[in-house]
Image (cartoon, rainbow over all chains, first blue to last red; front, side, top):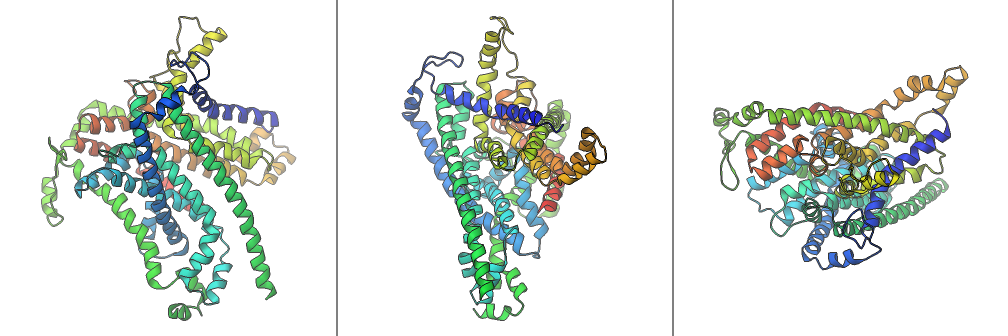
Length: 274
Length: 312
């Protein structure tokens, strides 16, 4: 059970399973042949067809706008929710509130999507860009809340206490001390929210309307018609963007994390010296 | 300012409050109201519409319930027609049962594959652990739809798996892999898509474990496999429960995977709901399907929430 060779085999097989399908998908986006099983040589043909596909480009633009807006709104609401959960131990309906934060994480998307749509119809809002954005904000804010909450729980409160003791107003303390310290988590939450929005098919399908076709909806309708290298090309670009984003985020997080620890040490030492 | 000065003597109270009463109020109220409006209210509406009659109009239903004043009216007009219909047509009952079966089998498969991976990660040298975690998380950031799509090209009869098996000689040139559009393809797709969700909670439970316990067991002559079942596994149970719930609940309502990889006979309730809504445009019936799915998932969701609260 403890043999390192067993562990190495398990990890190799596991990661092969996770990565080989994605690698195949990327490789075949450069295939000159239209057939999946025939390698017709290297070609960028599918990228240029994709570029000139107006419907696809429109969908990409809608998706980017929905993603940016809903991730930003979701991050603000999620950060507030995380503060409410960690800083206020007592307020009416706190149990229900934490329930509302955790439930959307596991709620089947068909239920969330359908119920929100019925709300929009009931209050007479036309479906389109805004309804998709509201829907995405609602489920992404819960993910942000969880990410930020875990940072707030391991947070050194003495810095905040010091600022408050020295007469800094609470709101200013939040922006000067708390927010900079939890910022890596807030950024990570935003990134997560953005990719979740970029990725969502089911909730968007229920809540979309004319002129608000998102990229996953577009890709889904093409996938139903069959596998084509053009879809592989779009997917490859999306994978590339997300991978770059994640790597960039993890590098900046690491750097700010190191800086944060150093700053905290300095602050503590300064406090001790005075 | 005055507010702060007043609360300052009781420092702790000031910090827990985090500010004057209106900021405190706002921090809680804004996300709270948003969730009440866009998460809770929709469930009340779905419940209401599930008791409505189907009508050919937009929205395609006649509300049973008009205005919040007439509660008595509401109960007298309740229409169980949709629910009765659900029990009468075996399609729905089979969809529910089949969803639960597929979710249960998939969760078990995920545990069988995810546990050894998480264990191997937790036992890896500390220096490479962050890289391993990153490698598990990265596919999670990639679109669900893209990852499911990747399997179509592999599994379809004239796809890459057939090509591979033919090239290796395990299959004749006229034979083809018959996995695509069957339940097997659905299991592959689910396990592939949900593996990171299973591995990460298991890993965080296993990583926290105190190794001296295993050393003590081995010093006292306990064989490794017994030590695993007596020490490692029981200690990792919170991770097992969290991972299983995070996978089981959404899989039950899964739509994309059975739709793209499953066959016509792959019954899953998420697919049935989708067809009812987009295909037959029967919104009240789709709502009733959703309400029953939600009721089925209440217990797993509560287990999940208790687990999360313990962790937090």
